[in-house]
Length: 335
Image 1 (cartoon, one colour):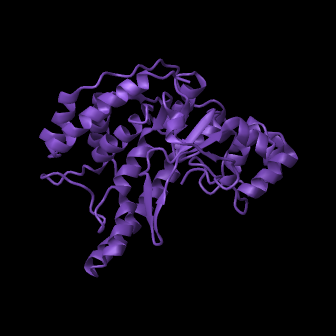
Image 2: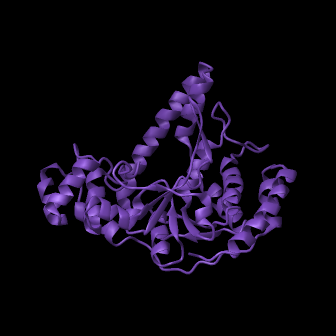
Image 3: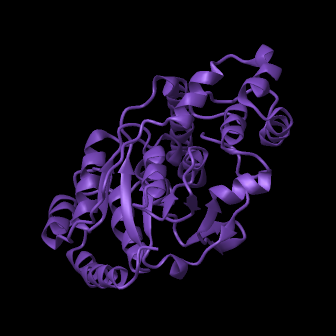
């Protein structure tokens, strides 16, 4: 779900080599859900070990992050803390969507429709507590910093960027921008190539600057928060009925101030806009210093090979890349 403002914000492609030596604060749940959804067999079956435990997330964390680190990129993975109570409706909607996807998947299995199985299997992906803890263990063993946010992970990522602990936020969502994160990079943890009907298409990272967004849209930070609320956020899914991003932009430009903006649509509101505004204006985040841990090859072997049946040869071949990546990132400056 999240903010649907992708069509109105300016962005530009960036090469991986341009990010060499940069620290990226990654929205952990966002990235891990990508791995769980995309790293699957054609019929939608996730990667699993001999005990039928899902390992797609571990594969993505290990191989895709090593590819990023080989470009000289330094990574911080930020995990969500407590959800705000206003997010309950979004969680309920997502659960309903997962149940619908599961029913469609089971029907596709009965009909032996492999394409439909692959399509719907992604729709009921779940990330449990054990998977989260194991992801943290593997990341730290790889030399990736792990941060536990007090609240929303994406908003904590923005805080790290504003405090100079990271260069940009890595996420497919936009919340980090709305709370003033200076830079957002999308497509960072996706596979480099994506398969479409017409063939494979190269996927490159895109960077979105907070200042460029405000300047391009001709609004200030408070108006940006109002635009997000009008369009719909995880705290008020759907936003104001009949108002999409473009109409919301016209309204915030015309009325300028939050009270005046929402006064114009007060007859359409079924949520407390002031409460949501406060979430973005004063997010539940903490100041913290982040240190990248040392690589622990023995721990990587334990998690991947001994516990989850990954190929020892394949894993150990990555160790050279991991070591070289660490050195490459250390040769460059933070910014």
